[in-house]
Length: 127
View 1 (spheres, rainbow, N blue to C red):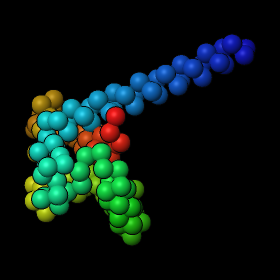
View 2 (cartoon, rainbow, N blue to C red):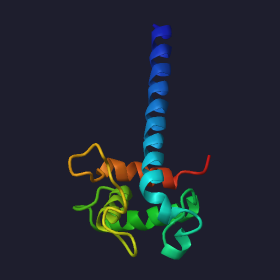
View 3 (cartoon, one colour):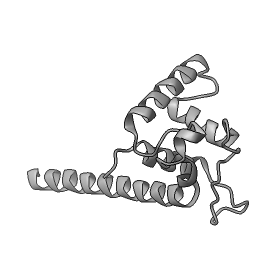
View 4 (tube, helix red, strand yellow):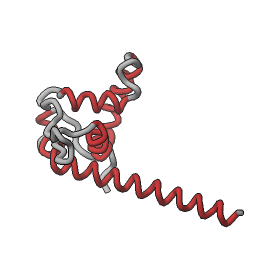
């Protein structure tokens, strides 16, 4: 019984890691294709957008998003919802949807999951 339980826990941990890795890879792919032009260290300050892997800037952005979500819980579940909505609607120089295109969707638009993966990648620390 102990062996079975340990095996299940190990399998669960490995699947969780694989899922996170897949999500991070998807986020990086979307970033490389659609986000890097405006969120790289060279252009982001000019665009007033947070730099990819600048964890402090992204923490501030998420903290502000959490405040917005708490003020409007009917529209937003959490801070990530606010950030995804910001991408979808555009902000400042960012066009609605950013530059995100997903060839696997009928209308070629990115899904909320695509936006979230890209945001999470940009929020992550540089590896």
